[in-house]
Image (cartoon, rainbow, N blue to C red; front, side, top):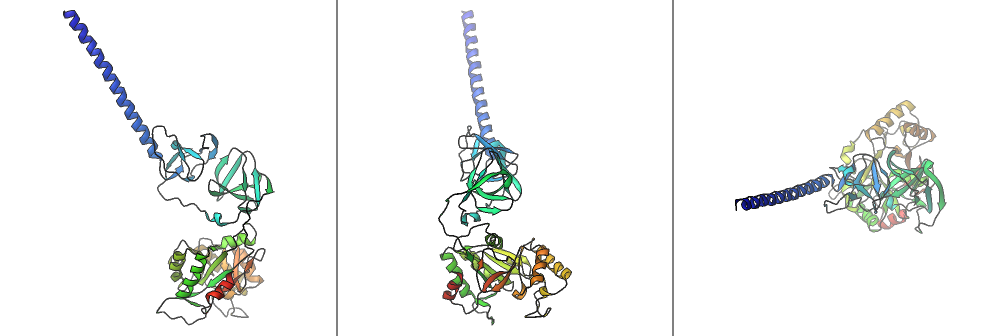
Amino acid sequence: MKKKTNVLLIFIALILIILGSFFALKDSDTNNKKDLINNIKSHYNKYVITSKDTKLYNNKYKSIGIVHKNKKLILDSIKINKNTKYFKIKDTDNYIKYSDVEKYKHKINIDNRYKKYIVFNENITTNKKVKLYQDNKLIYTINNSLDLPIMRKEEDGYYVEFNNELYLVKNEDIVKTYNKNNTDSKEALEVPVTVYHFIYLDGEVCGEIICHHSSQIEEEFNYLNENSFFTINTKEMEWFIDKRIRLPEKSILVTIDDGARAEKFIPFLEKYKINATLFLVTSWYEKSKFKSPYLEIASHSDNLHEGGKCPGDQGSPLKCLDKNELLKDLKTSRDKLDGTEAFCYPFYEFNDYSESVLKEAGFKSAYIGGMQKAKQGINKYRIPRITIMFDNTLEDYKKYIN
């Protein structure tokens, strides 16, 4: 009897040991599963950045190339479980391994202005291994040939769309270009550049012909917005003149001169989502006074907006003063404006000498008057503009820009 009791006790002990091991293993498995999920979650965010050069995968999780270190990415929303190995890059068919990215704390804004351009009816075909660049930085290395429409032309290569962003493919990676009917959309062959000066609001007085009551600005900006005009910047104007991009028919460059009261334009720019360029006399006003994502700030000189310095017309200093004096002023202005490459001649006055000085100072384009539209192939240092006057009606405005 005693022997049977001992056997039973041993059997029960074995059962308890087995059950204990089972539950211990189950608890361990549960904890490991939680740890894995937490680890995956620690890498996930809407905005991430690659922590190293890592593989880029297609929708079958096959590697198609490399995403280089420090590439900022926007991810699709995902429900994470223990089987999650990849994160999907938003609005693409490509994936990145979860362990190869880290959370990025700030919002990532992708510049998609190029989507307003009209694609060229030309494609490029690349080598079987191709490198894609942004701002002279290598972003992707793709291990298969690409055949893509041209979005922008440069001397050292072509810009194309990849993963919903614009990238440069250098000439060394291009096998050929060829004609292809990518679009039937009509492009602009000339672009109006309008110029405003002083805005005044209800209860304020302005007695010059280049003053604009806020109601005039409201009416004209509303017209641009309702008719889907693409309001370009000065760099896009350069590209247009050089035929590096194709702009839609309804394109316009809106400019403002000097800086006096120019901050009062900003609420109207932001209300109607109008991009504009302020040509600022930098010794008169600080650029910080004009902060807006809709306002580009370019140079109207640092302190050369003073008449009577040179013979003829209003006597702009740019026409005859010593070159070193002019270069010093222009450098000061560019430094204050983060190296802007666009300039507007004070009083719209210029000559061959002033143009040569601007080139030496590092400017790539300059604006005058002229009351006509800018056309492709013109001198980029003599881009004409249409001055808007206080008594222009909306019908006048339509005639200027259409």
